[in-house]
Image (cartoon, rainbow, N blue to C red; front, side):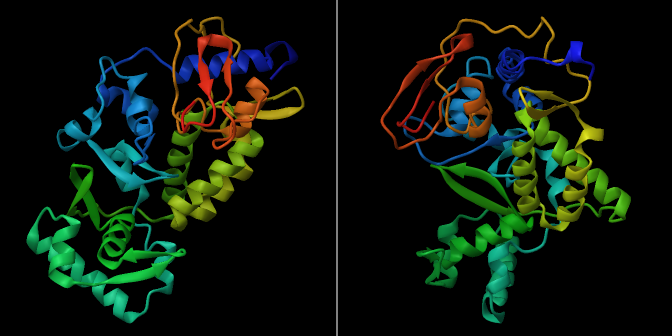
Length: 319
């Protein structure tokens, strides 16, 4: 970019707020525009997905995503984190093979996984309690905690793309089997898939300082380990894929065709309470660069009124 077009840090901040906190629209359109909505089960003060969507969906009500989920073309899945994304994106994530934890499974656990998959196929929409009652797998020690083996197997099968979440009832996942269409696995097609997924992440969190782009590439590699090499290749050529500029000594990236310095990126004076996983707040590195204080939960609370009328509250699990 020429020096005249390089945005200031203040313009990058305004651009980020304006593009992320867009005019409220329908639920499906908001999810499609964002590409991914991170989820979290903690309800203090509310679930992250509800807090995120409340600012972007017209007349949104708590629990609306869960209630309407079976009728919408969306999926629960692990992407760079766990959350919700358009159904058309799901096939880009698979086949991603076994989750890392499966590498340590012995033949007995592998057999159990196949038995659970066959049970869900026969049974249809299945609650975890149905699997527990049928198999009585007991518990297993993983990651310093005792886990229910049946839940562990269901979550592993879901990660692998062999099961999907059909709906939730009372917050509990109801699983069913799913098949994904065959995919072109040529090097060119793999690179295109990885590029599309990385573009989704950049679109959601832009503008990103270079260090944050490296971080999201690492998260994406965890989400699609079978495309990790392609993600690394895209990271190495990020300057040719995304618009970028040096601002206050740091390299920043954002989608091609967007101008962070455009006058149209205006922010309103509304007051908003944002979840820690909201796209505006999610990148703590960027947050500190934009507002000059560190966002960390668990420390004494601090209320800071910042540009655009957005208020953050630290220490209570939400911004």
